[in-house]
Length: 81
Image 1 (cartoon, one colour):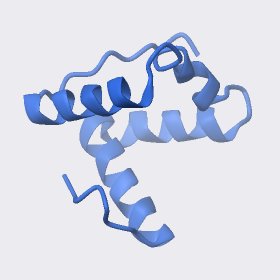
Image 2 (tube, rainbow, N blue to C red):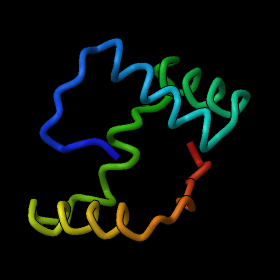
Image 3 (cartoon, rainbow, N blue to C red):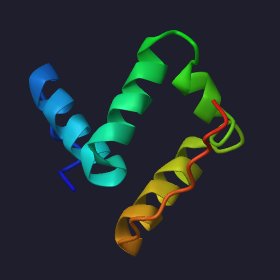
């Protein structure tokens, strides 16, 4: 994980994001995810927002830190979109 104060260029963010998606989903599922998000059939931000709506910034930061420190690779994936 990188330093939280590090600023990336758009091309670096794209590359890192794609690397994360491919590592977690594989190439085919990454393509399906990107196609669904890009098609306008879903709004990924709205779709996932309910998870964070009841958290204040300190709780959100603590949850991210706990997850990063846990070393877990598993994530709950809602395939309902």
